[in-house]
Image: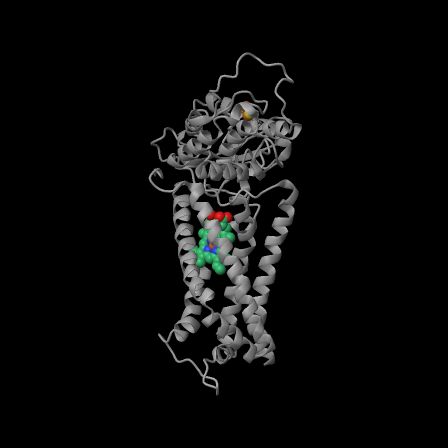
Length: 246
Length: 220
Ligand code: HEM
Ligand code: FES
């Protein structure tokens, strides 16, 4: 496959940045999107140019590091797929592909396609943990948890914190991420102890960092590579109301 | 910008959704009274008279104004914050919104606001005696029906009215289910029903309001 790429290049956080056109040739349809960038970068290095900086780590869809905004979608057009799991067979020979970094005030660009997602860590530090003493590892069946809650908590915990929800949302709201992190604890007995404090603190931090307000467009759920459900946002809103009223 | 000293984003949304739900019930009452016009001007006048004299309604009309003001105030505040949270936009962005009109709430909201001003100017201010002249029935009562009938026979007015009402319908299509989600009332079992209800509400209310002037213009 031959493809034309329009890639955001920005040397440093202070740099203005601009789109640069690149051509890549003879790409196998079985190449992954990131491998295609590796090929491009090899060529750039050969020519003595600066390779395109992008985030990645596991390349198997579990770490949440990869973060490209491809042709108008975070992680590209394929549903429930991270950038690293996206393959070139999803594109057509001769396509032009626009690749941009996540755009949100709390996610400043560091270089090219890499943004600083420390804002998510700051939210986690506010309450994304359990500090209640739970003793040694209990027997698996010693704490009764109904199947429904166990499943919902597990689904919420599938969030890999990549930030696609923020990138997709027209308001750059982090509600899907925060609600997944609130839910994964709130649904389980160990997490219930601190549930009220947790939701209040994490929401306050989210607002303080400058993420937008949720207006229920549900773009986040549609674009999330882990298909985190907006019912988590509703749960967080319920928890928030409960915490404020008590 | 730090929101710390203000209400949190969720609190603002909850206030907005409660005011919004209140406005949604008001629209149903308003549409019911308007629909009396299809029967007869006199029945409508009776309805208008009831609304104009009933003590409960009289108190509630000020609550309603406050509801509008708060909803509009937070709508604008949230929107400005939302614009600020993405200073640099995308070169290419797909339409990812799953509730199609959610993208245009501020614009359809402003359309409703313009309509509201126009509406107050045509009816409420006249009733209050601030502008224009209120026609009277032979028995000496306020003839609100005649006022409406006259406007609904003006082609330009009917056209603008119908267009604005349809744009309001877009606001309503997102509104009802959004308020449920904001209040945390989302359960997978009922969610399909709530979304359907929201759409049905928008269609019934928007078409209901639009049909009345069209019917009067063409058939009465
Ligand atoms: C009859 C009039 C109106 C009704 C019934 C109504 C109803 C609603 C409802 C129920 C919501 C969803 C609230 C939520 O999910 O939290 C909403 C959202 C919104 N409304 Fe209205 N509204 C009306 C007029 C207006 C006006 C005059 C404006 C003026 C600016 C406005 C601006 C907005 C905005 C910007 C939103 C989206 C904000 C968000 O989702 O947080 N609305 N409306
Ligand atoms: S690189 Fe780990 S999820 Fe894509």
